[in-house]
Image (tube, rainbow, N blue to C red; front, side):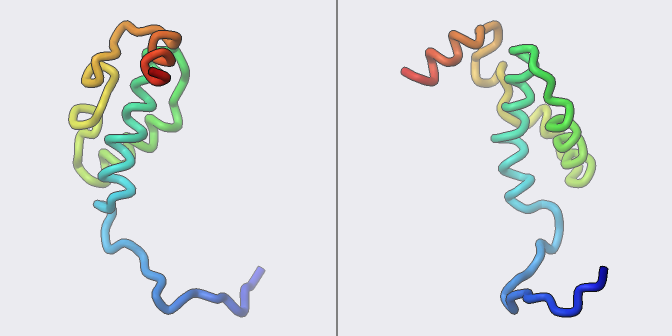
Length: 89
């Protein structure tokens, strides 16, 4: 299929590199904690971990070491119910 007419705003631009906040903020403060929580609760986060590993390769940053984890949040050993209670306090 050929698209003859596309409407792209003149102000539209793409990042110049992959060290954008979408990776440098969302990975360490969103996806790594999510994967870490999944590990704690026995929930598979295979796809999330793949995205984290790809970002690690692209940005040469060990997000697993530098990000928020269950251990850094002092939640290691907590149950799902205990975490829900903390969140709802």
